[in-house]
Image 1 (cartoon, rainbow, N blue to C red):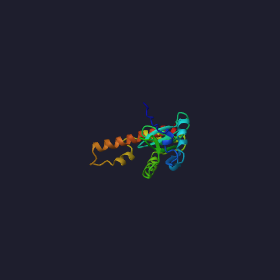
Image 2 (cartoon, one colour):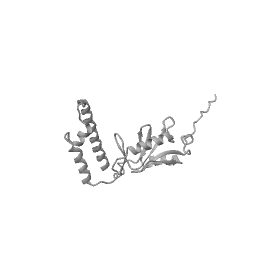
Image 3 (spheres, rainbow, N blue to C red):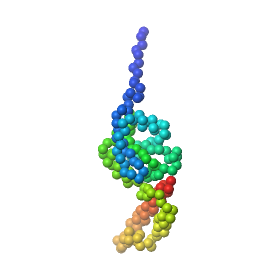
Length: 187
């Protein structure tokens, strides 16, 4: 009895679209994101492995960046909800079924360009300790008798306790966000 030969699937490098150019967003520290074309995806894959680059999920795309633990003096590029991205990075799409990189859509490029610009720290320049101290004092010395605060709430007879409480909580959140931003920009 003769056995049938099994059909072997081609090696993964033949199935992949490594020769197809893909569009990515490239963001340098302190600059606007730019569209870049990567002609050889194989080089990108090798760089990810050799340089131990991190792949971080962001919205429905992925950020490929350097590991800040390996290079300690990188500047903050963007501040996300639970982490910060240091140094230059690229934003890329990944096809989860094929496990391959794919090109960004034009809608994604437009939306993420604006989104990444909004996530940049306000002070990307090196600041002196005196300036940071003054900024922190302004934040911590604010109280309910401050005229700026009173003007922002616009107390009048129609303001009730709930509105006042909401305004206080919003201001607390703003203060905490500024403190976190300052701490992250020092790293």
